Amino acid sequence: MSEKVFDYDVVIIGSGAGGGTIAKELSPLCQKGLKVALLEWGGSFEKKHNTRNEIEMATRYYFEHGGLQTKQNDLTLAFAKAVGGTTTVYTGTSLKASASVLNRWAVPGIDLDDLNPRYEKYIQENGVHLNSPEEINENNQLFYKACKKLGYKVEQFPVNTRGCQGLGTCNLGCAVHAKQGTAAVQIPAAKKNGVDVFPFCKVEKIKDHDVLVTVSAPCFDQEPSSLAPGVYCFRASKIVLAAGALFSPILLEKSFGNRKWPALGRYFTCHPALILTGEHQRPITNFVGHPKSYYCDEFTESHRFVLETCMYFPFTLAKNICGFGEELDDLMKHYAHLQMILVLAIDEARAENRVRLGRNGMPKVFYHFSESTIQSFVKAIQESARIFFAAGVRRVHAPAMDQFFIFPFEQKKIDSLITREHFKLGKISITAAHLMGGCRMGEDPRVSVTNSWGRVHGLNHVFVADASLFPKAVEINPYLTIMALADRVAEGIKKELEGK
Amino acid sequence: MRVFLTPKTLRRFEIIQSVLVPRFASFSNEQILESRCLINSILAGKSFFIHLKIKFFLVFIDFVSWIVAGNFFRKLNHAKQTRILNLFFNSPIALLRIGFWGVNTLAKLGVYGQVSFYPEIGYQQREIK
Image (cartoon, rainbow over all chains, first blue to last red; front, side, top):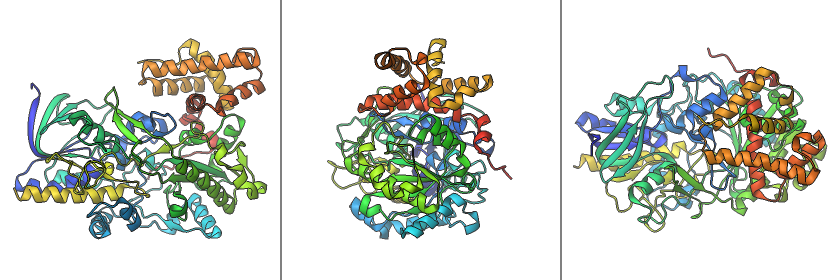
């Protein structure tokens, strides 16, 4: 081997909610003389790098501009490449998994008794709070009032922002760094305690205890890695994979083959999502202010979907509008009048939905929509239309219809206008940003990849600490649960290292 | 860098684009250039195979125009052009819907991806304090 070799006690791959948390939790060990490295494929974003230009920032932050297509080409996936991972581009909504979700997961040791103290730690650390009423814009207020009017259960999202200026561009990375993701909180703390952070460091393969990487130069004026571009080897006694639900499984596949773990890459879930719009007679405050203040979980148990407030940028919205022509332009012309709802379907964990290593070394995602997910979408679109009308819109655009708009006089016909028959995959833009599973936890190596402490079955020194651990969908925005599980993985590793 | 909108493709694509996003038809020269630039830059990193697939789909739209309406897409009137595109949009064949979705998304990108277009739709970003 000709590459330069660095020796570490722990090497963490990926710096998102999982990797950043692990780095911070293990960092006190650096003061006892242990060496910890955090490797990240992307670079660090400073405030000056954020132009708030939709296309430019999507290109800088996301893989495939935020639209990686599945093999079936009827679903696109959004995930970021940056120090801080996808926590740089989320909205900071901070929810705990419910007891019923953890019961469904059925992983021994993973319950609210175990996770609650961990959740609380990050709720404190990340400054999670409820925005005050004056910080909530009309787009959100209208949703809340309409849900109440219809008697639907509606809750306010706790968020983790500090000094939010309501720019409304959370998904393009915050231009004032108000979101308290791992790049803002955990990674600086880890660095301060002595963790070495290496940006632009792409992990190619794990070979026993060696992590083989390629360091590249930044694409624009981001701070370069402390290592010159080239090929390196990080040798570690423990390796933690926190590269996300697409890259952690394929790194394991690339490094150890896919025969060891029948469940590797399988049981992938992603909360597939749709954007719906209702147009008001007058402009409302929608694109300024925090975009996501409320959610409605009235239908979580009965129909397996959640409705959230949202506001997207012009192209993202246009892309999600189902149709073309004069009606599209007319709706876009009223951008400032639009109220938006995001539908998140709670998809089942099915073995055939999986991530595999593609020929180009990138993940290839095989995802088939089940009939129950499609039924969830249809019901969610119908309910969203009712919410829009209850909010007083003058027309609703929803997919799964054979007309572009529904008008108030057609309200009574919602269920016959929005139907399963009109819901055609490939016609409707469906996206997902909550990528989960692929290295699911469990006791049985035939149907899981890691144990409940994140250790990969049969590999004593390799751990996973990201959303790929989830055995099934978490049914809410996942980052806080990723952090709680990463905290648990860190606890296990710490015990072993301290006992050494 | 691989350029998607070569002169031949450009002609075919922009006729379709102006039906998909009619506002494109009244774009200034500057906006047309920006549209091309956005589409080319998004597709620059894509493989030759992806470029080929999209180009083939554009040709296929012309082929279907011939079969259904007896002429090239560009020579049809607006109503017929819309009818042809609706055949793809609503097709019972998923592959055709998916191909159409890709072309439609590129057409929208060229228009609604332009920052200079924001004021026209009333999108004005808040100043940073």
